[in-house]
Amino acid sequence: MRVVPIASIAAVAAIWVLAAASSPRSPVLRDVQGYAVATCLARQDNPVLKEQGQGWAQTVVERGHGDPAALRAVEQAVKATLAKGGVAVMRTDGPTPGDHALPVLTCGEIVDQPAVRVAVDKAVAKLSASYRRR
Image (cartoon, rainbow, N blue to C red; front, side):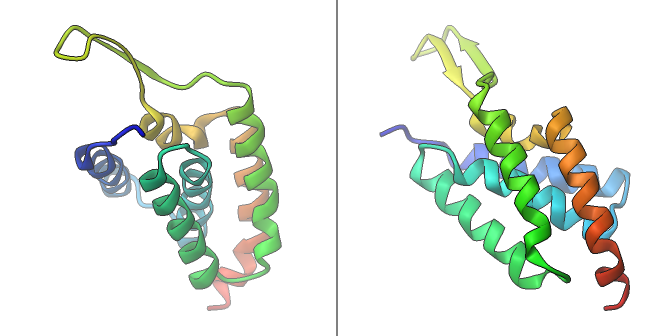
């Protein structure tokens, strides 16, 4: 079992907070992008990341507006992107030298992958009217 330091999880939260502070997102964009990141985390082997991702995704669905089926394409795009591989890696010389996978970084940046970005944009377009009505 691989242990993920709490600092890694906190780093993702800090990235999202800083991103939101510098360029406010609409609630629908926040939810759909959050769902993409959550889906990525839920697909990780680490049980803590998996649990956090599942909880985050469920929260987005519960608080969201409109048909949650609009999120399926986002989930499929994340799944397909992860299947291609390409997890971020950190090389260290410290007490545990070598390459260390950075799944939190990979998931935090999953919304920038072309297929995911397209799926997010389509889901936002489908859900925007429902968010405006609330």
